[in-house]
Image 1 (cartoon, one colour):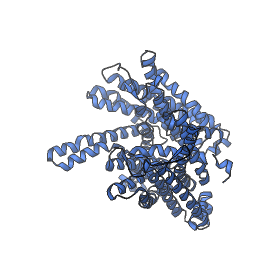
Image 2 (spheres, helix red, strand yellow):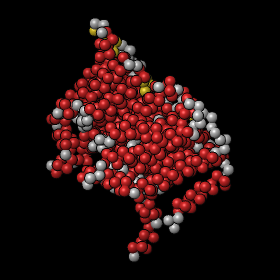
Image 3 (tube, chains in turn yellow, brown):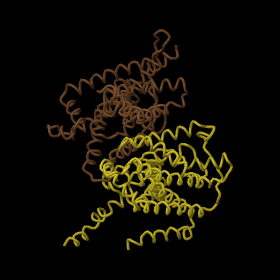
Image 4 (spheres, one colour):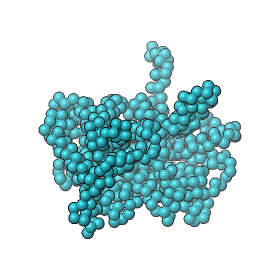
Amino acid sequence: MKKYAPFVLLAILIAFPLVVQNSYYQHLLILVLMWVVIGSGWNMIAGYTGQVSFGDAAFFGTGAYTAGLIASKLGLSAWWGMAFGGFTAMAVAFPFGWICFRLRGAYFALASLALNEICRHIATIWEDLTEGMAGILIMPTFLSKIPYYYIALALAVLSVVMVQIVMNSKWGYYFLSIREDQDAAESLGIDTHHYKMISLNIAAFLTGMAGSLFMNYMGFIDPEVVFSLHDISIMAILVGIVGGVGTVYGPVVGAFVMVAVHEFFRTGFFGFFKGLAGLTGSEFLIVVAKYIGQAHVLGFGILVVVVILVLPNGIVGDWNKIIRKLVPMKNKGVAT
Amino acid sequence: MEVFLQTLVAGILKGGLYSLIGMGMSMIMGVMKIINLAHGQLMMVAMYVTFACFHFLGLDPYLGLFVAMPALFLLGCLIQKYTLNPLMEVESILPENQVLMTVGIGMVLTEIARFIFTSDYKSVQTSYSGATFFIGETSFSVALVIAFFIAVLFTLIMFWFLTKTDIGRSIRATAQDKDAALLMGVDSKRITIITFGLGSALVAAAGTLLLPVYYLFPDIGGPFTRKAFVITILGGLGSTVGAIFGGITLGLAEAFGATYIGMAFDDMIGLIIFILVLLFLPGGFKRLTKI
């Protein structure tokens, strides 16, 4: 049963836009798929290799700006960004990793946070190239969302398969050994710096591709959007830890949950409170609906706190624990 | 020459406040070995506390210190006790969970402040906000000079506290070797709680002192968190003396950068210093001073 679950999920995802014509839900699912890609990238470097990165937005934004600049400066199609976005993100990741992998744990996290901020400042200040805060606007290629959907799906499948293949290879075991005990790994003759670089570059490649896709799909970027610490870097971490750190399908689950939570708050529980307020005419509920609409970052913050306290290994990682809590009877049955 | 002197003075005065911010972070860093990414947000909360005191009670910002510091001490203790300490017992793959937790706490604090005070820019206007005096050709902002001296005072008090009192020594012992301290009968859990409270109180002092000459909005925490970690890295991790040097260096670097390179590079300079320190002086000033 468990073996076929990914294929069933994939079949559902392929059929989804043909069944559901509502473009709002298609949009949400495109976002979910994009987050699967970013989350897989983050999971590669942080979940498997243990180097927690707070700077995913640097790679994401680089990918997005690659696509945007190819379209606006060279006059080519922005889809060329999909070909180059991953590699430009790697070009950012390479010197960064070279310098900053001498740092460990929380200090590496800080350095990646600094990278994120530096990239944002460069994109803001270098107006000749990036148009600064005015951002880059391109014309979307397709009117329908369906082509974007399948491209996003292909990218998401690619990233999940890539993580799976890498983690089943020799590299994967090296990554895990670095996460578990870096000194022990080093003493066994693993060139930890080298393998951390590989892991970071895979992560940057995936995140950069997601950035290019974002540019093509949204048609507009500015530094505050694509280099945002809260909306990209922290969200990537949330996707990783909510889904499950160091699991292949963790980011998939995490992306679903996080996009749903985001929309949940943004629309005020899908207009639930607004509808209720309209029905009862209660002033109080109108105010509540208004505040919930503004509270999505607060909701995120509380979610981080709760998830770390209760499910430190995420939904997939702590799945057995959840089942045990929810179905105490079944557990007793097994025990006796 | 005048511009140079003026920049020097501005940098040192600002650096005094940065030292206070860095010292709090450094203490937390030393004892718990985690980076507190909610540090700037705690400062933001303190600024709002002082602002509320000023706005509703008419309390002078300097008297607001006596409200904001105990309040933030309490808040810091509660955060450590109910969110960070329980994490020590939780089994998880990533040891950086505590850092992620502080990010979450920072987000919650910012959004709560936004709820209560909205996103509008606020400021505290006092009679001395814009006042200056001159020595030679160089002008000194009265509020910043007062802030600088209070910051120096707090630094001295902290030194006395850390070197002479029982709790202070326990804090230093825990920072040096947690297990050994535990064996010597130091209740390390209590020490972490007190340390987080003290760090919060110090950053609260910095925030309150900055308020008369600065403005206030909920997102102000982020940039100050970044400044705080640049200072901590610059000074050497967990070193109090280092944090003071780090704070003044950052203040000077920002002032000179803004004067001679351009205002837009204000934030960049700190981050570039950060990378340079990592490259050429890993370990920060602590390596040079050995304290």
